[in-house]
Image 1 (cartoon, rainbow, N blue to C red):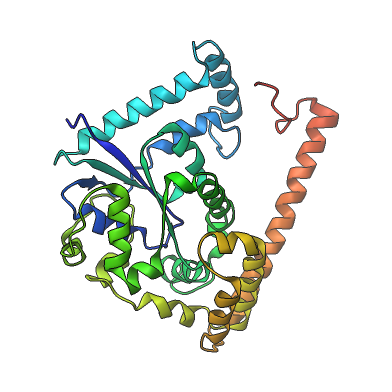
Image 2 (cartoon, rainbow, N blue to C red):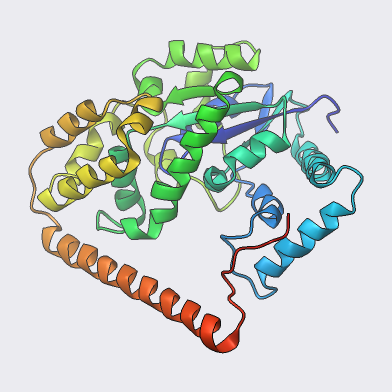
Length: 331
């Protein structure tokens, strides 16, 4: 079992090219990995009140854990330190080649990026960014056969992206940012910078050997691994054909405003350039009717959900006397 193992986390949204980068990194003899562990989500969510629905009642668990931490000599710090040690021991057990780093690439870690950085001080963290419009197109192509399925991934496109941007801004000096487009355009230079951050040598052969890396597990990129056996520039333009109809272009413009001008600049893109690329995408009427219908249905669903939540709050407030959404008082 490795005794000097360091941890490496790769943060990104789904469909950002993380599996490609993971395989390139895993081709190095100093880095080992598995498909997508997801291990930290339930453990770090014990310190988060919202975001979990479970039979055991997660809000009550949150309160219980908070109370338990009050009894520890150093409070919540002791609890987090034990999570740190437990997870490191698990990672070490799968580090069969005694590599210097274990790489955890789990896209939904965007929900707990800040917490992971605090839990594992001194470790290495990569933030992988991609053109948001290309991410949206890839979600539709990969999981929707080109059809509009974006509401399913709201947690990624809104909460996830905001979390990643905030975690990146708060920890700029300790993390390494890299753009998917830059890897495709200039892989040698970009990866040299990354490996320099990791303090391990970069070998150009990695760009040819990564296609031999097989990641065991049911999660990961089901499409790119089969399609691309070498660094390809095809994805740089491919997304434009998916986003060609006017309804999708209009939605993308609104989404960009939601993210915010400063946030787009913070991750290495310029809003005007993104909008220019979107405008240049080939005009298409493909899926336009179904897109209009699905977007309208999603808005109706959102209104109904908000209304239901409001009614439930009123019911608990005036009749049952116990609001399950009341502000927690446990410190």
